[in-house]
Image (cartoon, rainbow, N blue to C red; front, side, top):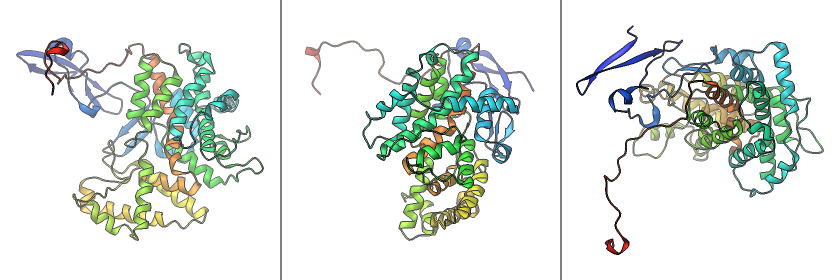
Length: 431
């Protein structure tokens, strides 16, 4: 394979290097294109543009492959925990027993937020969206720890990471309790990560929430499957902020804001709303599928297809099995699951959907699991944010520690008015 690609542009031979990733991905390095030719590339939505080289996550959308630091997501889902997976993403390797113990200890030591932060929750209206609260309070948490806003240091990174990974669930649980007029429940050091979050969400001052193993495992799996997903909208936003050398807390808060968008983090909520509407209409999914194929219909099949995956989303295969196990363990006969299975079967066998490669994605089942656990719809995207935090932190670190990293500054093609001159107000025509 040639190490360069050459082409003619306005009679000039342009030579650009070819880069190949460890998994065989190929790219043309256009970083000197403007310098050589005066041209830039235009790629709306960045669908064909690599913004960085990364060691964190690999995705092959055509083959349906997802790996964290080279390890298949199937292996992590079966054998790992969310805390161990978070360590893998942020520090680059699976922890030893000692390293995992020390990191878990750091999480416990940093699970409480500053007491004065409780008063900040009072400033939000009762109907404030939890994602707005989460973003604001992550920024506020950094203010209460001034040393966290100092320049990045490898020696302090583990503390930065532990504080953010641990406190995001505390802030999320407090936001939920506040929005429902419920008393705040503090974390308990005896509980592990996902169990502690459920405790803070659902316990009462007079009675602790019953932590069923199937529920804890299901939530832990959701966190693992969402822990990172390469250069999506929110992760790219975190890297953009990191390139300016803003603090880790600022980057994470920006990631929450990007994830909040309905085209990014709100997909699992949309799936549940679709299933509920089908059920309320007395349909088993058959009529909805037929309408979804009609271009004139407003029916849209949510939870199918993916910007990256052109095959079955590997996370969907994993979470589908756990969804069945959870509902069986809780003895929940959920009509929404039956509808979901009918939709999935139709989408995998109907030529209309097969030809368009509209396979189920992870959002298709995660909403059903969260509903079974008792997590309200407005908290779905917050759960996504908790799970994605290690990936954001890993990408922030990678950007900060890249010696060749510069502040991100995309170009544009200007399509506005050509040169014109200022007209005094008295000489302007009334339109």
